[in-house]
Picture 1: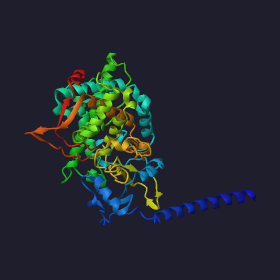
Picture 2: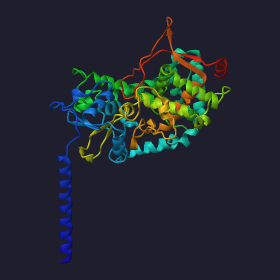
Picture 3: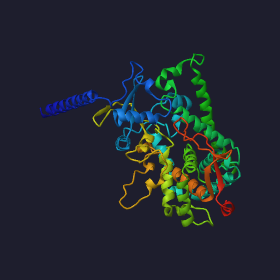
Picture 4: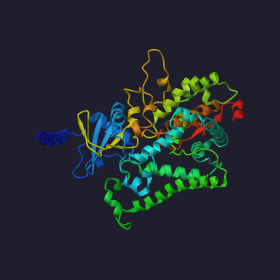
Length: 478
């Protein structure tokens, strides 16, 4: 008889647990979505989505609706996070359910970027990728073994800048590509045009374009993937094939180079890191900032001259003794962030946050540029002011932008220490060797505009500046 009661108890417990689960789920679904623009029937907020300067529109919505804003795009829920506090609470403290990536029909499925770390779904393959990259560049100690390589590449960069300063943007791209490809494959990049560097740059530019939310209609209506190529408006299928070839070539060409070297017995170094070159944008922003803010440049150069002297160029060992340069680098990352709205996350199960219902499968977008341009956190945010990060007695320091600009939680950029070191190295050696000023045309100074490209990775648009050695001694050092 006791066995029968035990079985009955188990059945009743199971029924009670099921009913409780249903009650909790129903209560969740009765909670409201976060507020947001009203939208239209069927298409939702598709017409509300900005085609450029997304961060500015999201910030406008913050003033109307708050730190958490929801949109509906053909039935797909998108959640905009307009405060770093909320982003940390959701994307870091609840990272077990907020670490997936949205299914990107165009860039992920059709082109193939879902096979890379940045877009691969959350799961065992993602964790394997992360472990591998972490072993190589996951911490400051691992990055130290690449310091000498970074310093060597920065010297080459200064030489290029000395001979053709008007090609500064190309030199930044070339140097960043050289460094990453050397680290990854042991490949010595050729001076001038290099096929592998060009290939990497093209693939990264294409990724920046295709990964913007709503960039391709097939991302919102996946069934369009199956329309025939001759169907009106199906040109995206041709573009996908072209982008796919670029991605595959970017993977295969340098990999085949490594295999050939190993077969010939010429490959002896341990390499394996590869990554999208977001440092290009930060370094080019540095040149734009120095052109527009000469006082910040002067203060940094005075500190370098005082600490390092003028008989050698700075090295990583000098970093801890250059607090103003450190503050300047922080301001470079804050002023115009490389990835203004981050790479979207996807929530794996229903959640409740701040009294709002966050449905399973929602796309989560952190408004990173909005964080950095909040005047309540960073005074006079659109001006370049390194002093905001210089510590002083009794001063309340604003958040370090490097805590947010590399992403959140388990999706934080694994190359953040590499990017930080690379940008610092470029900034400090350039400041030691060159003066960066406004260009002069017909006797008049040219004021460059602060304009950035549209895309997941945002770059300053080309601008003119004058770059000259600080002295004959500096030119000799170069």
